[in-house]
Length: 451
Image 1 (cartoon, rainbow, N blue to C red):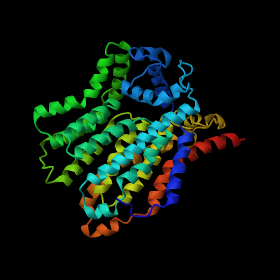
Image 2 (image 1 turned 30 degrees about the vertical axis):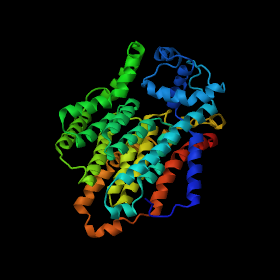
Image 3 (image 1 turned 180 degrees about the vertical axis):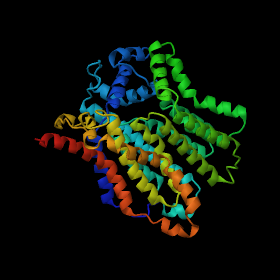
Image 4 (image 1 turned 90 degrees about the vertical axis):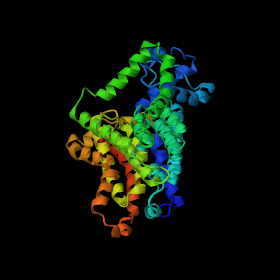
């Protein structure tokens, strides 16, 4: 699937250099903690991993699969003597080579996810007129400002869950439902939120109660196996259940949680009773699947106190939704405004964390002059109202645009609606790379040139 404009060698160079800039300049401290935690495995702490790390890095609240993956990836550094044992005083002090190596793992999974999204888009049977002119989901995901922020700036490792979810979705559309369940089992063990999209996908294709139970058991297999390995550790149980409780309750039951739960349950009920022949009505099956996943994750972001790196979980389904929407240029502009709102919200909600502080954890952090200004000093809380609105509109944008098209867009306007300004696509990419970078540089410049 080609883009409705020519991508040149210069475009690829600009893309590569821009991502490299973000790769080297930024890192959020969560990656330092998770990566350093994995070192315990490299020093032989298999059975007492969680107990050992409670004393040395302050504790771990992910399942071991995260730390296994980082430990395997860090074996070359261990063999070269570049992986020391860590303490409470040193676990956040990653060396430049550790930062580059750990971020490289995340980037590999990101581009693996890009390729999987390309494979899935080829499986989808949709309106040929739209597909002929549409931006490909693969290209959209690779250049999404939210993806660039989550992977290259924030250095988030939720991309692992995205990768295995996409493997599951690829198997799902290939009608290999056992592999679908097993891949999602791995994705769920990386991020429990993947269960929110696993359930509606199952309900679309399976109505028999015993088989639903079977899918459920397959879906939690990887998680249960990891629990069995460490269930005797009170530290493990305390850390894991504390994290689950903190993320799901968010300080108690509130109206948004009740409404979103009701909408999600209603969607699942509808999908269970929704009868469709997946062979004869392939397009309808795939469309329902993609938009069900999109709605499930959008509801999650609406009712929970979300984390900045979580946005990458939703993005593949937003990108796939382009294949079913004619006015794609509207989605581009809504993503641009949503991203600007997202950044404004982040720098005001996680002051001193998701901010200029990430540049000091980057590869060149020691070379950057210290600044007393933060992003919230330049973009204050007075913009939070419009910022939240823009962000939440983006979350539901494919659904809203699809409804708008069905209600108000006449068939005769199809040709004009597909005309995509190249400028919108380019602005979307450059905003993703350089808006946060410019904000960071402005904090440094103003702080060092004031007075």
